[in-house]
Amino acid sequence: MEERKYWDMEIEPLLNTPGMEKIQLAKLKKMLARLKTNAPFYADMISKAKLDPEELGSFDEFKEKIGLFDKAALRQVVMDCGGDFIKALDQIMPISVDELDYIATTTGTTGVPTPYPMTNADLQNLWGEMMARGGWRAGIRSNDRILFCFALSMVIAGIPNLIAMQKIGSTMLPVGAEAKSERILLMQNLFKGTVYAGTPSLAEYLVEQAPKVVGKEVSELGLKTLVCGGEPGAGIPEIKKKLESAYGAKIYDCGAGFGFSCDHEEYQGMHSLLDDLYYYELVDPETKEPIPWEHGAKGEAVFTILEADGWVMIRTSLGDIHQVFTEPCPCGRTGFRYKVIGRSDDMLKVKGVMVYPSHLKGVVNEFVPRVTGEMRVVLDEKPPRVVPPLKIRVEHGEGISGDELDKLEKEIVETMSKRLKISPKILWAEPGSLERSHYKGQTFEKPYEE
Image (tube, rainbow, N blue to C red):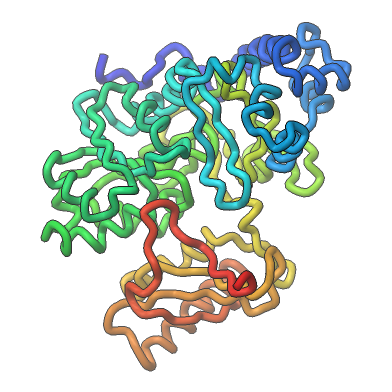
């Protein structure tokens, strides 16, 4: 039993097959019928669209009649409810808020946090199922101990994720990002976790701190698997290589939807693991029109949850730009894959060239150890438009100065020019001078807000 290929041997072999769409459409019709009866916001939308859930014939019809729901739409619902978030939730859920067991959110770094209202059934059968399927593929078993380092506050990566990851039966070590690096490392030294769960930026920081705090390199701490999410990093080849080398462990990327990366040596994106419970599509980031489903397609990711009580998303965008891969993965596991190109909120335009911070960070990390890998994008004006040159503050490595810095700057600029079609201005920072975060890594400096 412990060595079966998939967590769910009945459903997972069907992922990314023609039969899956029939399962999805049948569940969508039931969900829409339930919302029409019990969720006033969606009941009004379905009525105005003249959509009969029982007669719905295809996903094309669904996408034609039902508009997108994004952060702006959520803000409008809250405003229509007099600013009362609880009343707003009652409008968009098929159950009463009194039936909820948890309310989690996004971090809200770009404005109003997106709520994730959940019942215990949602947590176990939706989010828990995704983490169990992904964790199983990553080799996590009931005898593992998970050093849980995501923030334990109201964010979905916190307590809900901790409960979800425990579905496999592993022992949880819930130290949390709030405890900060010294306690995290002390707890790992005591209880010998085999799996790290947290942001990639915190995993990077622990590489620096371990020798100072416990007198050991992170490779000596016994972690064999790193499960990272909440921000780009595990999917950036240069950071993936740096972390796997430092820890002597395999790193897995998860999130930005219902995906989990595989164990192929070269990052293949995240396998979509929950197609029986949600529907995924891409739309044009500007026109919001559907993008044809084909290998290599890029667009804004849109999610529709097919089975849930409180956690209802109907054609909902979280603001991420993805690229999808529908052809079989060389790892041999099922599920179409997606790579996160960047967040629509983080996109920069430099002389018409679209640039995402994750791409910049990938290039900078190619030059480790001559740089530490820590960097910030310095914005003098409100994005996305940037008057060139784009300024990037980069920490140089120990002992790098003078002519060596000039040479290094030239190399970084030439690499970015060749690969990203921009020629930035590098602003050097001393090693360790840029503030580290135990939550999400910082991306921007915004002098224009000061």
